[in-house]
Amino acid sequence: MHQILDSTENYLEAIYMLSLEQDCIRAIDVVHQLELSKPSVSIALKKMAAEGLIVVDKKNCIHLLEEGLEMAKNIYEKHMFFVRLLEASGVDAERAEEDACQLEHAISDESFNKLKAFIKLND
Image 1 (cartoon, rainbow, N blue to C red):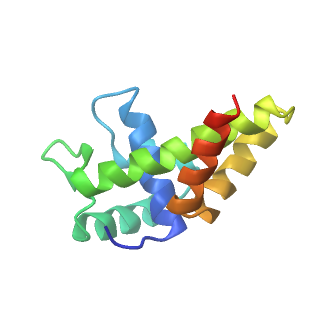
Image 2 (cartoon, rainbow, N blue to C red):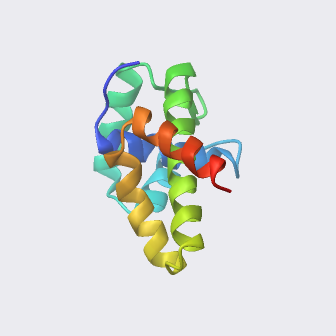
């Protein structure tokens, strides 16, 4: 697995989240999900396809490839973990969502896994 930018992680997570709700994810869906411009999304998707993270089929549906799916699931797991942790600590839902977005990028996989195991031990 190679190192990716926070912005790429955001795209992967958005595509993954959309894939949980719909079969065909198009660029415009990503535009709306991330509230970005069409050109920015188009450039990012082309880069991600070149890196082997996604593929766009003949119907213009975006699909996560194996490496992209693995990364997306990892990012989503971190995000949901921090949302739940923050909300359980009394943080309001909107703030928890915003902070989770920052935390998911800032924490290493090693630290995340140790934190997750520690919290399970103390449930």
